[in-house]
Length: 206
Picture (cartoon, rainbow, N blue to C red):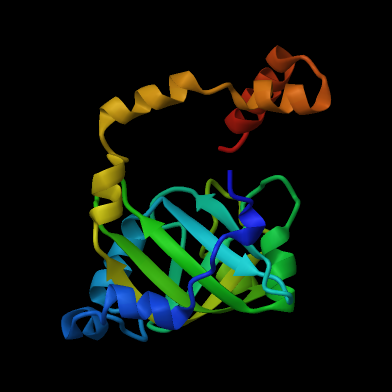
C-alpha cells in the first residue's frame, strides 16, 4: 500500500486545468450580502455547520442548531449566531480570536440546496443582540457576529447523492455504536451509564 506521505499533491493550477472554469451564471450567483431569498432561508434553518481556523490555518468545523431562525440577520451584511450550551471546548471561539475568517453552511430539512456564507467574525456579549436570541426566557451568554463577504446558494447534488433526507437512510444509524459506547471504549467506563448521562443532558436543553 502506498504511504500517505508519498501521494502526489496536485497544484491549484492543475486542479483548475482538469475541472475547467465555472460557467458565468455560477460566478454571478455569488453575492456579497444577504438578499431576501437568503434571509428567508436563514429564517427557516434549524441547523448549520461553522468552519473556523486558527492562526496556523488548522481548520475546525462544528455543528450549530436550534429552533428554525436561531441565527439572526442583523442587516444585509451581518449575521449573529447564539452560543448555546455545549461541551465548553470553545474551539470556534479560540480560532476566531486568532483568525477571524469563517464559513457557514445552512441547511433546511427536506431542501436539497444549501446556503453558503463566508466572511469574518468576532464574539460579542452585546445585550441587544443577545436579547434577540432569547428562547424560553433564556438568552445566550455570547454570540458570534459574522460580517458577510460572500453569500450564495449551493446546488443540491451532494444532498441528492447522499440521500440525506431519505427516511431509508436513517437505518444507517443502527449499524453504528452509540455515543456512550464510543466514549466508554476510550475512557474504560460503563457505556450504559454514559448513554444515560447524554440523554439526560439532551433533555435539559429546553
